[in-house]
Length: 343
Image (cartoon, rainbow, N blue to C red; front, top):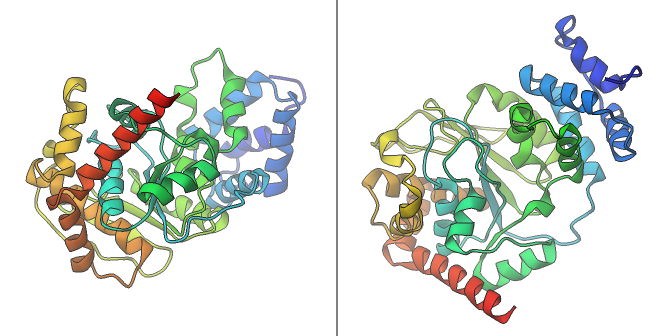
């Protein structure tokens, strides 16, 4: 580490003596400036990420971290009225791609969905991994996202929505493997994506992180965020566990169903696409279909909180039963094939 350690890094390392010490937005801006200028040594980058991931900062420091990044991001110059972003923090027990399935079902039921995501970190397949297997493209700009949304009512964004500073910070630790160092960044990732939707539904695997994530959402995300958690530690609503939805106001009660995590386990690679499409068509296990329906209903309700659970669940069920959801997924796959052929 350099002799002159950046004040942010020093403050985080000194939290053993003062766990409540806070880092403000101006300090974070200073750190990002140093990173951009190449003035942050690898040792400092490693210490920064390791410190954040080993001992979570206070909600105020996390909020300042996120707000500083949002303030540096280019304005999208466009909005997606009525659309919802559904994305999870990752972590917890491994399940199949519930949030991606819920995105297709909610979109097929009439709620525009702009979904951000990532590659797998703790699950068998992240949303990017699944989309690649399906042959569904990710958008490369907000304008491209708007076009996809207009055509089909659903769009999957690429990495352009995430702060460039985070990618630069991860590159700064190379050749060390970044995986063990980026837990904090991964936790906040869904709230750092610049996706100008009307609302967001974010699954949280670690319920202890809810106060921190609520502080970040309130400080850095310009639209309402529903944080969904449960006693089973999955980053989606389950129905058969004690689910909670934190809206920043009155908690939203969640309908109870039956089931078990065993029926949500990921399938082998060779069965991934077929299993996913079967669930969208309502042909999966009752638990898998029910969990996707519940999460799609949450997306529908986040777009319009006046919609009741029975109405939202009925809309999601019809989208699956009628074939609209699996048909939407198949059209997305066909669109990709056509685009590749024309290219």
